[in-house]
Amino acid sequence: MDFSKFNMTPPHLKEAMELMKSGQLKEATIAIQKNLSGAAPASHTEKNPIKDVTPIKDVTPGVTSDVPMSQDRTSPTDKRTGTDELFSKLPDKLQDFTDKMKNFKLDLPTVMNVSALRTGVDTHIEPSIPDNAQFLKGTLKSSQGSHDYRLYIPSNYAQAVEEGLRLPLIVMLHGCTQSPEDFAAGTRMNELAEEHRCLIVYPSQPASANQNRCWNWFKPTDQQQGQGEPAWLAALTKSIIKNYAVDSSRVYIAGLSAGAAMAVIMAENYPEMFAAVGVHSGLAYRSATDLPSALMAMRQGGSAAPKHTGSSKFVPMIVFHGDQDHTVSIRNGGQIFEQAEQRLQAQKTGLTTRQHKQCSEQNCRSTQTEIRDSQGVNQLEYWKIHGAGHSWAGGSSAGSYTDPKGPNASKEMLRFFLDHSLGHVDLT
Image 1: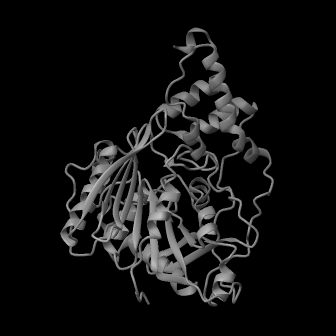
Image 2: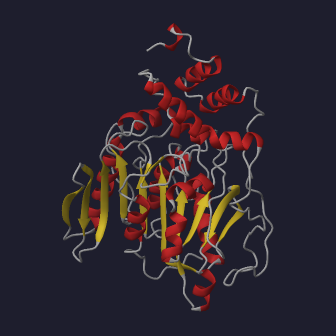
Image 3: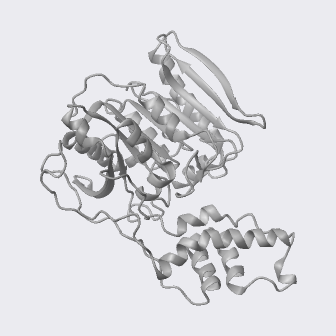
């Protein structure tokens, strides 16, 4: 229904709807804020930007003196005022407005997606962490330049070091418009790290590299070993392994959307580094080589399922994709699976495949395909999530692009990861 016939739509909201239709979420958010507050807002900037940090000697047991660490540990209970407070309440206000309009039987444009607008509000809000745990800010300087990251150290890390243990490490690559803080909150991976005693590093893609903070998975220079983003991600991973009590045979990588596509690239080019890879709503290796082909692949998958290339070994993989994903087509999930299956079949024999559904009394939420080796160990899993869009399954609404409904992708990924190890490896 056209609101203009009844002169019901406030000018700023009407403007916001037009901006959202054209994909300008940040500008739409500002326009809606004008309507809600009655005053023009100050321009929004990132809160608590990640700073370069100075090495601190012997802060944590098992940490060497050249580890970049920060003493800036923002309390999760820090209060936000003024514009920040208004932004934090904006999604709830929009949802309330949407609900009221439904009571009038008015059909709001489908572009009014409150959860998507959350990505334009504040993706740098600190997630809460347990006592004695740390969520450090760091910067790695390498041949590829300086890059920021967050490192989660569980509260039981010091005890593990005293016991002579070395812990698993998970590299988590956020999606477009997201940040390490947002991704940590949405996936709740830090909570699982507490339970299973893992370290988690969240590399940060800066806007200077991509204006939407997407990993540049579609650029040839960022699809190869020793170049671009893969090179610095590998350097960061090696740095964490070197400077913390990490079991180098149990290092894993996972991502969402563009981050998932980059995780596939990392597993392809650094198979000696990662024991398993998790891919959520991503794209197959080299399914695009420039921006136009990337947009095409996102809409309808690669022009053909990309064949595995090179002779590097197969890396065990778990894949999640929603069959109602209108940002990255479900065809991409199928192509990722096919590409991995080709490599697995070329390198292992005695494989068995089975498929089953995860169902409730109401409906079937997912269809899971597993390929096991001759020892019965899952080497490849593909979870097709029915009715799900472009969002992390089982995630928390505290982060963007999450779907609280199951399956719990974080829990399933960690379960899959910990079933795999590389054996003895030396990455020094």
